[in-house]
Amino acid sequence: MEMQPLSGRRKAYDLTLRALLYLSAILTCALLLFIIGYIFWNGLPHVTWELISSKGSYIQDTIGILPNILNTIYLVVVTLLITLPLGVGAAVYLTEYAANRRLLAVIEFATETLTGIPSIIFGLVGMLFFCNFLSLGRSLLAGCLTLVIMTIPTIIRTTQESLKTVPQSYREAALGLGAGKWHMIRTVVLPSSVDGIVTGCILAVGRIVGESAALLFTAGMGMSLNNFFASADKFIHSSGASLTVALYVYARERAEFDVAFAIAAILMVLTLVINLSAKLVGRKLKK
Amino acid sequence: MNMKKILSLALSGMLCLGLLAGCSDSASGVVNTDGSTSMEKVMGVLIESYQENNPGVTVNYNGTGSSAGITAALDGTADIGLASRDLKDSETGVTAITVAKDGIAIIVNPQNPVADLSVEQIAQIFTGEIANWSELGGSEGQIVPIGREAGSGTRDGFESITGTEDACKYQNELTSTGEVIANVASNPNAIGYASLSAVDDTVKAITVDGVEATEETVLDGSYAIQRNFNFIVPEEGELSEAAQSFIDYATSADAAQLITDAGAVPLA
Image (cartoon, rainbow over all chains, first blue to last red; front, side):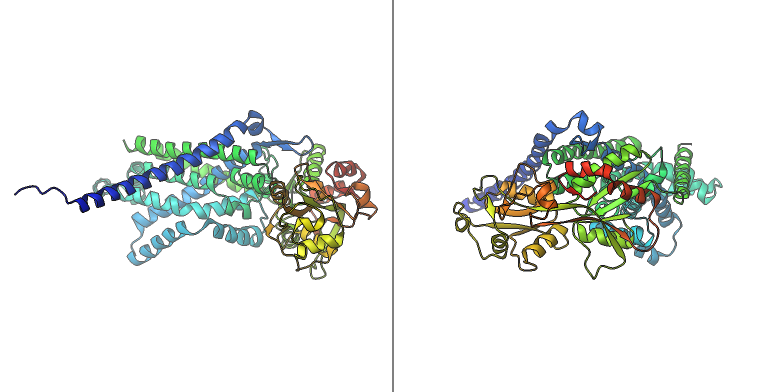
């Protein structure tokens, strides 16, 4: 059979499509680079040591975001402390213990739906339930509890996925050697799926650091310096703005766009670090 | 082995949290205030100097708007609500404590040559009867009236004094004082209103009926467009010790100079 050269029309068609595909790839990359570049260009020059190491003062007319950095850390740590045991526990139950397939499907569908709900709805529910009904007021604790609800589905999903990849033969071997079910899970199943759990955690941290709408409603915009270790009482009652909420406050309410861009740059770097470490840890633990 | 470590870490974390929960009954050193964005500067300086004298107490400010502040005081999400307007008859269950008076500055872009307007002219601008700056002796240009959202105390004060309730035709309704100022600063044809305490040199505050908005003219009433800065507290139930002491401080003579520095007019 002889090779027929492509007809002119088909050649042109092929070329156009290829050009369009290249164009969309270039546009996407350019857009991304533009956003990253724009934020760093506008933000990095304003990231000063004074900004990130002090608390703002109205009397001296200075701005500092140390309280917001600390609030973000508190939110991450406390939320993870609650969400991790709950989420991993639920995932273990769902993959190892649950016998009712229909119930399982319902729960899995529910967690999947929960991940897709807009965060402002979590904020509204958190505000009405934690702040008003449980009368926690606008406080860091109410913010953490709302974040727990938001991050639990992520933890459950990733843990479940990695639990499912543990070969059935491991379980059978452990049980065959006479291990109890919990002992088997604790010594065989969980250690071999720890990479998934850690990845889930890091994803959750990313979600917490990036969250703003839900926190605006529940943790409020407090700019005071909270020393978690000196007084736990303050952590429970005090409202506190995370970095993202501070970004909102500085950009919208105080019209300090330099500070807003500086915070944006810091958040970008944080996100980058979180994503990279998720990849790295996932790869390392898998070995 | 590794698993045990993680488990014990998680467990000890939960225990710590239990410890936290146990603390919540003791007297709280936290006062959350919530409301008017016009009061941001005044609250900022009051909070800062109060905390210098009372390092054990943390006072927070949430800028959500006057109506939201009144609601927060009612349902307990905040210890003290902040409202840059007086309470309406329908708002029961709370009382207002006036801390300061504040002028509502009428602001235009610094490039705008118009320097004085009467209250009537201002009302006509915001209701759309006067639509071009040339009608007011300015340069040719469509007037862009910028206002605040419906829950704002500044809007309430401005509209009730100029008699333009629900009649204003805004091109833009923004949710904070800072935003209005930033918008007017960037649009040569814009006119807006904002707390006098927040006005900086990025915008020009015009005189109203020939009277400049200053501390004296607000206090003696000759500057017409003004309102009260109020603390809103629930009528029922005791205020926390810390909240009461902050209110006492804010209404004391010690705070007067700070309030003046923040651009508002103290009563004490």
